[in-house]
Image (cartoon, rainbow, N blue to C red; front, top):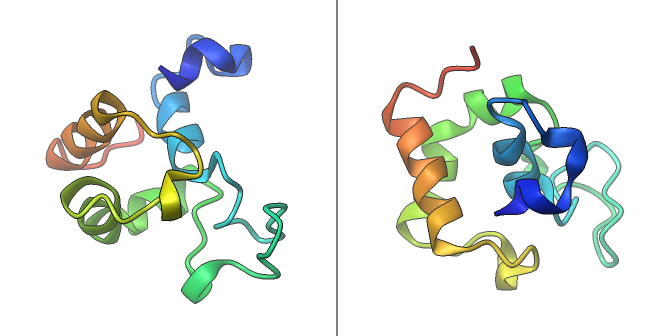
Length: 95
């Protein structure tokens, strides 16, 4: 689980989600992943609100096709993909 590696997410209900989606820091305002000068396709996933707004796209790319993260740079596990999918299926709520 991603949360085990990032203590700052302990106790945050959706902290794992944010880290699961931007762990490779490709989809940030200023990506730090080598080779990325800007967020791919202009898709920003660096805030909970942006992640929520992109929920249908995330479902398609990270859960259904598992095409993202590209090359699985973050090492996203099947159970993490399932949790993201369950969050989206539950309405992608931020509360």
